[in-house]
Image (cartoon, rainbow, N blue to C red; front, side, top):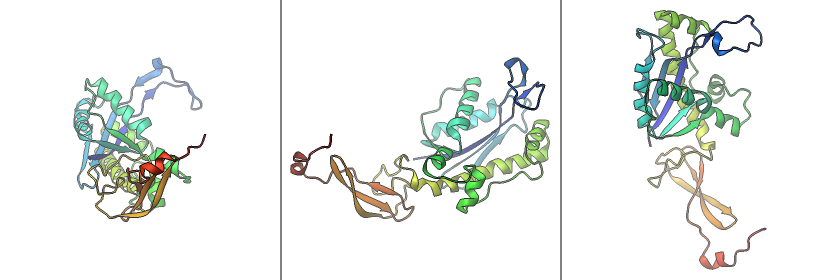
Length: 254
């Protein structure tokens, strides 16, 4: 399967407001709507990081050119991984695809590392930067020269130094995300099966040996249980080890 690691950066909306506290902004107060400033992506286990941004666009709000390049990658992907992807990255991308007149890319499955972190663990923070430090992988790139919101302000102005920093920030995010994903993956009981060709771990897809380790029991069956000697994930066989005679006399709970 082709697994795409993805991260986008969007421009903030600009609006007329009368207060710094608890604003309820109406549509008639929006001066400039959001759009995609840049995106970065890479294939899992690949070296190349793909990147595109609006730094050379004649109209920074017209992101259709970089969207077509992103569409081609998503159309090729079987699985897409993003941090907060289900609530942010993918819906935002889809909205801009629709605006640009692009059709839906071929269907893919999503893995949201933010949702996985919340579902399986109780971290002090579920932010990607914290998870990277906690798990001992490559840190997220921090934009020190243009801290906080300033980076987005300066790229909108066309500052080449700000765009250079945005590129480093965006591309490092996908590198860090892939490493965080690899750490979390063995714990994901709903992970797509990467072992559809047989004989490999369904979680990591690696050709590590699957060691038999006990059995998995359901109300109507007994299945061989395995642990991957590579990533440590657990899986089970699909063949019910109970004989027909044993299943005939099986009593179910009410």
